[in-house]
Length: 172
Image 1 (tube, one colour):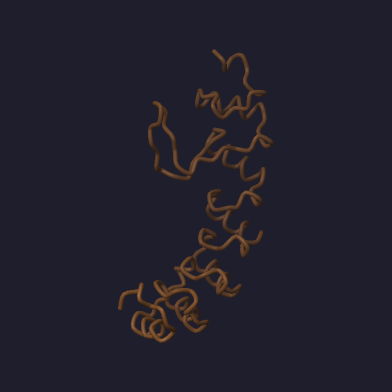
Image 2 (tube, rainbow, N blue to C red; image 1 turned 60 degrees about the vertical axis):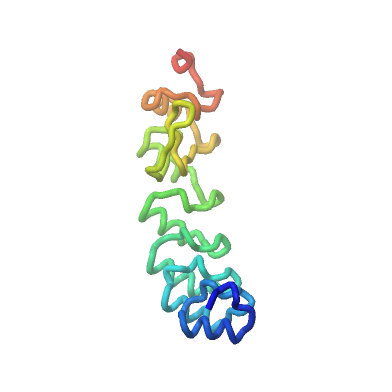
């Protein structure tokens, strides 16, 4: 059966019974039973479940098992999850901006000695400069002159340094 031809509840049920996955079934034909069994069989595929069917229990099971917030819808993420995730991985990429703190950015600065950092190994050369995917820059309100001096000493780049922190030494 072609998933594009699922246009009745009966066809959706037949597809489900044969394949045991909700992937390919139009949302309007999904049932709570399908969703629950899909999650029980493939809990790592939380992102395949439409948001309106995701429950707090699913989120807790997923987070406790996989220790990541990557596929958890924003409205389900809480500070406790952020703290556990940060303490385990020190990776800011999946942490929503409103949960990022000065302490997190300070940790990353001290680790990287740069105002910008990446959690990715993927990079390209653009205009003769190495550009990383998933590049993060410390927000200006958290930047200090000392950080800028360390950044300059380690990168010799003023691209990420706010103008008010650029010294004569850096302009040379």
